[in-house]
Structure formats: structure tokens, C-alpha cells
Amino acid sequence: MAYRHTERVQEQLQDKRDRILQAVRAVVAEVGFRGAQVATVAEAAGVATGTVYRHFPSKGELFAEALALNAGHELAVLAAVARSEGTAMDRLADAVRVFALRAVRARRLAWAMIAEPAEPEVDAARLASRRAFADVFEGLITDGIAAGDFPPQNARLAAAGLIGALTEGLIGPLAQDADHQPDAAALARDVTAFCLQAVSARPYKES
Amino acid sequence: MAYRHTERVQEQLQDKRDRILQAVRAVVAEVGFRGAQVATVAEAAGVATGTVYRHFPSKGELFAEALALNAGHELAVLAAVARSEGTAMDRLADAVRVFALRAVRARRLAWAMIAEPAEPEVDAARLASRRAFADVFEGLITDGIAAGDFPPQNARLAAAGLIGALTEGLIGPLAQDADHQPDAAALARDVTAFCLQAVSARPYKES
DNA sequence: TAAAGAAATGAACTATAATTCATTTCATGT
DNA sequence: ACATGAAATGAATTATAGTTCATTTCTTTA
Image (cartoon, rainbow over all chains, first blue to last red):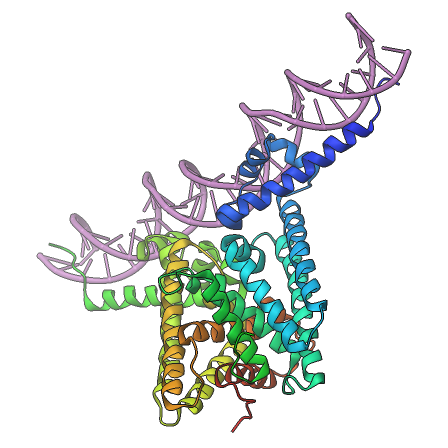
């Protein structure tokens, strides 16, 4: 026996895998799924095209894993906010605000992660993470209804509505012509106001 | 001179053009832009593939024109509702309801028309029609604010938010798992309630 | 009905981008 | 140092789908 995997090699492999996943993120943030080719990702990761296929079975699975990874981070952030102290109203306001601020900070990436169709595997992964996001909002809305903060309503649908409003207002095509929205913070504030008003049925002022 | 275009031929040509456009609509309603190939459209229209290119310069322009045509119809319907008698509140409620009912009736088509990315020409055409839709909603919201029906708010953004909420609630991927929504009418009602509450800041009951 | 011009056809061509694989480079243990 | 096996490489291959164009079919007019 003249060769065996050593720990160092394992680390290098893991490292290369991670770098490829990060490269997907970077490339997608730049050109979206539409323009993201395996060759471009490979170059961004500093490896040859073929190497990508030693770590991932196909473009679809690679991109799906990259999306899941990224969505996982975002979800953790959102869930932490949703779990914090305060009334349901306050927590929902914070959650929406955090979502909004993070989305405007990286619009292209956010759009790709939330809405841009891609390979079937990617779409499937997105559906799962979308559900997770919606669940966080739905939980907050349900809490708010129970506490009397919000009027009775279809919480599941309202959660979907919030995501739709956030998507459309912040990162969708209509949000691209930023003539009217020079200021990301102002945009986030107005979107938050819309969302809070939508579920609370009260004109919303930032606290 | 031994040949000249006669009126009958002109009509046949126009007719074939129209049939191809209709075929795009039918195919897209079935499989979305993703799955819609020129060969499939040609077959659906009952012509050869090459014939499509005698009427349209490229797939992108063909599909863009088909989208614009369809969006034009929908916009006319919506604008008529928006122009009718009644308070801004009532007209907005009607507009949202009409949008919702028509969208759920043909989800796949609606999603393609509203959200599904495709060739650049198609995306451009969609952006234009989206603006037109948003303008209708924005006008109603502005009217409502002026009339004191709605609290002051960013009408442009609220209009985008409505479209987002409608899209997400009715036809987006989360709306696909219809386990919770056996009834299209109920879905449309709840989405309408969400939208009205969002802009009016009042729990909304159908009149 | 024959000639002429236009339209339709669909198989062949082309462009793009994912995937493969023969070859090369690199790590390991004797 | 060298033999061995794994990993990386990137040019070649493959797959898909849009587009072209030589040929055929159809319309019109003399």
C-alpha cells in the first residue's frame, strides 16, 4: 500500500468544495442564475471546469446546494430575530425590517435566491427554503393574532403575501428603476410599513 | 407581371400570424416559457417550424409579442374595473378581486405572464406591462388617499406590494401546494382581504 | 394551363453550454 | 528516490434548441 487519504488531503478537498460553493454565490450575485455557467464558477473558484464535477454530480445539484447554504444562513438570521423578546408586532416588524435591509444590500443575489427560476433541482431547493421563510412569518402572525395584536386572518396566506410584497417592492423588476428610491433605507422603511399595515390593519409608524 | 398579393392572401397571412401567437399562449399556458420551444409552438399552430420565422424574426420577439398581446387584454379588463363608479376603496377591491379570480383560473399562464423569466425581449415586454398594471393600482391608491379612504403611504410602493402579494399568494410556488386551498374562490377572497387591509389599514370584510 | 413569384416546409446547420475522460500533476508510504 | 493511486486538468464530446435555406407547394394572372 503506497497511498492513503491523510487528514490534510481531506481538508484540502473540503476546502475546495467550499470554495466552489462560495464561487457560485459570487457569480450568481454578479450575473444571476441565468448567466452563471459552470466554467465561470470554476474560474472564480480557481479550479478547472472538470474539477467541479469531482465535487458535485451536476450543475443543478451544485447550484441547489449553494442556494440551500445561503438560504440557511438567511433563515438563521431571520429565525433569531423572530425568537427575540417583545410583542408579536415588534418581532414581526424587526423580522420584516431585517429581511428588507439584507435584501436591498444584495439585490441581484436576493432575487436569484428568492425568485429567479433555474435548474429543476435549484427550484426544488428554493421551494423548501421559501416554505421555511414563510413559516417564520406565519408563526409571528399567528402569535400576533393570538395576542390580539392583529385581527383574525389567514396567516398562511398573509405570510405568502408578505414575502410577495417584500420581493416585489425590494428586488423585483419594478424595484430596479431606482429613480424613485435613491435611498435603500427609505425603501426598506416604506416596505416595512406596508407589510406591517397589511397584517396589523393599522397605519404603521416605526418605533 | 404574373403574381400579386390579393386580399385573400393577406388575410391568410394575418390569420396564420394570429394562430401562431395563439399557439404561443396555449403552449405557455401548458408548460410555461421554460418548456416552450419554437418547434412545439409551430406544431400547435399547425405549421412547420420554418414558417414561424416567416412571420417573426426570432423566438424572443415572437414570445414578447404574445406576452404583450395577452397582457394588453388583461390590462384592459383591469382598467375598466378601475374606471367604474364607486369609492376608491370599492374600485380597488373590485380590481384586486378581478385580478385574483382571473389569475387563479389560469395559474401557469398567469405565472408566466407575470413572473417567469425568459428571453430578454420577453422580460422587457413584461416589465412594460407590469408597470402598466402597477400604474392602475397606484392610481386607485392615490385616489383613496386623496379621498381619505386610505392613510397616507407610498402609493407606488404599495402598488408593487399588491402585485407581489397577489403573485405570491395566488400563483407563486407556495400557492402550488393546494392542500390548504381547495377552493379558488376562497383563495381569491383571502388574498383580496390581505391586499385591502394592506392599503386601507382596516380589517376588510367583503361587501 | 403554363409561367412566375410568394409562401411553406423540415432536414440540416449552428451556437451554446453542460459533461466526460485520457492525460498530467500531486501526495503518500516504502 | 520511486512506485502507486488519487485528484486536477481542459480539450473534446454530447445534448439541446434556435435558426437557416434549398426544395416543394400553392396562388395568381395571362
